[in-house]
Image (cartoon, rainbow, N blue to C red; front, top):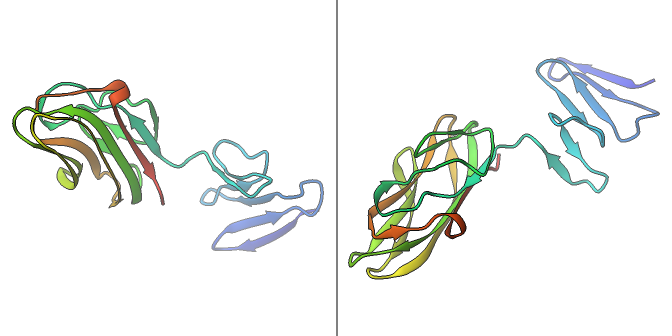
Length: 177
């Protein structure tokens, strides 16, 4: 027979005493929790070595479109997406908290030097720089505090001669908590 602990802050917490060793269950509409080797895809899972297997944390990644010019870059279709809303040139976050974001892209500059930036709600947060008449793989990475419905975008602040997608471009965003 499982031991059941009731408390208004967590509704009902159940710790079985036999037959389900290593299982912890909390039930109720506001506190779905199942820590167990056979937990469902909507549960927090901890494996037998104590590693957290989180199948619900938001993350997204893909490539940036190619071409020249300036302004916000086209996001395109993400290669993977768990929980984000994507528009043509922005990625909307689903939760308030800290996010790790990175972007790299091969660019060719004309005679002018260029800046490119990761933006939060349309404002540059971190910048990369390339001299004129150069080919460079530029990269940026940072952690930002975001609110629900804030958005990331990727921007060439000055005109590029050309930028490449595919193997020469990637971006990733991970919710950290």
